[in-house]
Length: 274
Image 1 (spheres, rainbow, N blue to C red):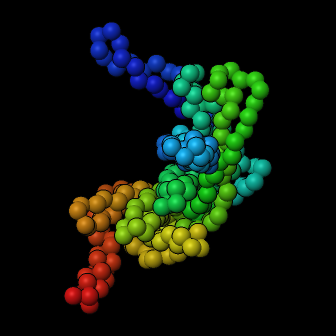
Image 2: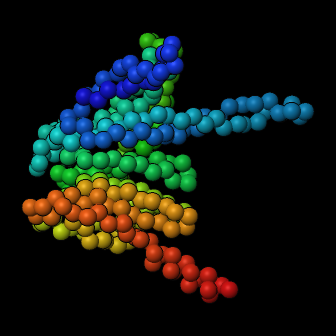
Image 3: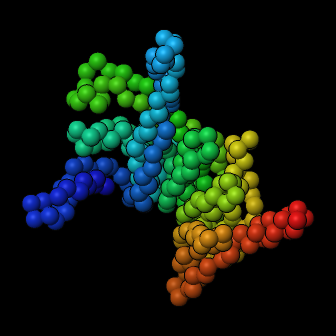
């Protein structure tokens, strides 16, 4: 189980962490918190001086907490044989709890991540180790109304929906990371194990028109257990945490200048312009 802790200030000025909520998981493998834009609601507003009504859009945001359940599904199982990864949402400031749950069937998810496009659509990524695939879900909201509720917050609240739009094969995927370069979303998938520990970890580009990812390149890795991107000024780097090679765990984790060829391409384009 996972516990949600709320930080408060005690009389001595020290921070206190009382437990406020316990969440069910089957081998919880990470936590990811982010915001999802709630579908806009239009309100009528009286115009100044003209006596005319104007439409004004009100934007709300929903707190979302994802806890991948790594052991929720046995290897080779699928569908009803699997327990779900839980996505908790709608944080209630009165009861101090996430009040709603969305379930997504997944096969050995070892990590999750997310990204939000320029059009404010949020996508969830699940690195499914047992299934050797990276699953991409589009998150959306709708409104739910209830006449009875524990708190006023729950009387009318948005519902969260997850639609799988793509499954990308990645042998032994252990983790994923996202970054944005020149307004283009990139995903890096860390491949932990294939036929052996020598793996190739792929990099994908997001196509906003097709709403899907396409392969950019693959990088040689050794038991890549995690990945992270780093940005220094205009330079982008990728770090793989490499776990093992055959019987040894004495592996050096390398920092790769992953996008240097993109920088060179832009440099050549600038040369052409000037």
